[in-house]
Image 1 (cartoon, rainbow, N blue to C red):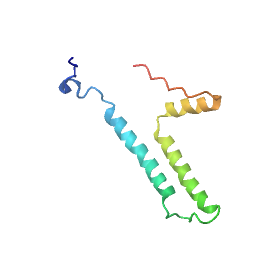
Image 2: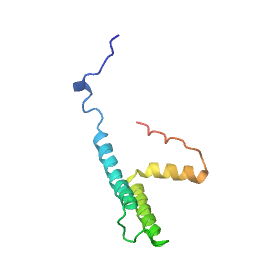
Image 3: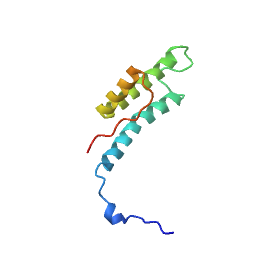
Image 4: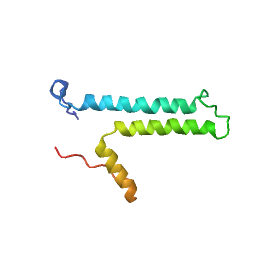
Length: 99
């Protein structure tokens, strides 16, 4: 049984938002990966063997990374999910905008 495969020459360039999504995904990773590496790294601003201060600097880095991630996300998505959390709704995917 043969499967129809679209010709790449016909489909190339039809998704104009793809490069923007790729850049956005890369920038999101740019906030998360360094934060995770800092938290698991033995080298810290405040060493983790100090009882409370060592964990507080890790928490501060995670909170800064979350804030940066939230600022990079589309405003509509952030507002949708914040409203869902405030209303106590179970997970519901965000509706796609009408074209």
